[in-house]
Length: 456
Image 1 (spheres, rainbow, N blue to C red):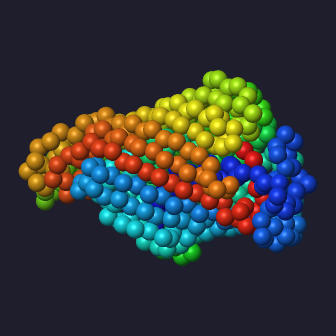
Image 2: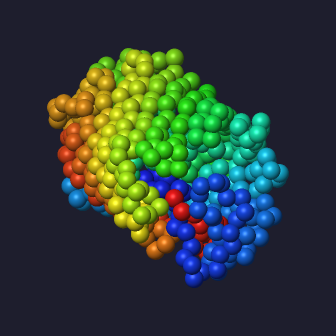
């Protein structure tokens, strides 16, 4: 199952609860100033520390996602459950050179094919579903110029380093532009590519990433068949990231701004080879735009109030938002934006506990809205206009569970959903409706002692 599972991944990778006093711990010596000392704690702590001392860092995580749409979608009443194991190994060849290997195991799962096609719209891009495992990353990384400059190349994607997630919890700030405009492989998937990053300060990074545009390769197989498919060109993203924490500022600011380009030509949102083309027939008019797909984006999170709470995270309120704009004639989804507010740090014994609310907007172009109306009329004889403005309203909450786990709960209500993939077979507009979700994530290696346990 290949799916965007980053609703919880940023929290999982950023936080694991420190070991309790009664557990045996092995404290690392290279702890950054100001952070709680990372420790190896658990039944395999000696093995984990030995691997680290010999240049091998291991991380194993598990994520289980459940969603239910009682009325939403083509059929309504659909639900899905799917889990993924994330296996991440870094082999240090020297202090400045290392090999990264990440593999995703997509089990267990239930009804993912039916659910995700039933839900198909711009907020829920249909993922590729064809393999039980995926090569996520196999790269060589190097640090240069006193660790300010980093180079990485090999089998990789762009989604972990560009247009990043984690500006809020829940579903509403997971951008769709990566999938519906750029066709970037999802987080578990990889193609040939490379990136460079320059850090003028420890909290500010300038980045540039380029991957081959080879959808036949990442949409088929398990990521190890490197010669399959053919490249349509390249996909490139440049960004600036700034990541303050409460160690840097009482009211930290986090932001990312960037620009993207996909070199491959694209078919017009209205005059393409589908049934919604008003000239569809024996000799349809098909317009191809040769300039490729370009756009800009910005997203930010700012704590606007905080006060010490006696815990690791001060009680605080943060606001966040993002906007994505894709240029060019004939684009299907030129605008996307989200905004919201979160309250956290209110539970000293559970520092990741958070509640929040968001709104997510995706704007269809006139051409795309007209295409969907035409396609319905052609296929089923139903003449229903497709609204251009689509919205998702989301409420969500997160809390730490069982020492090294995180539970994320939420409900989203989608208004004016479109039909992104199955428009040519639509018999009517999708109804507005709720999607309820729960995600449980565990840092397995931290629990076992194979990797260090850190506080936020």
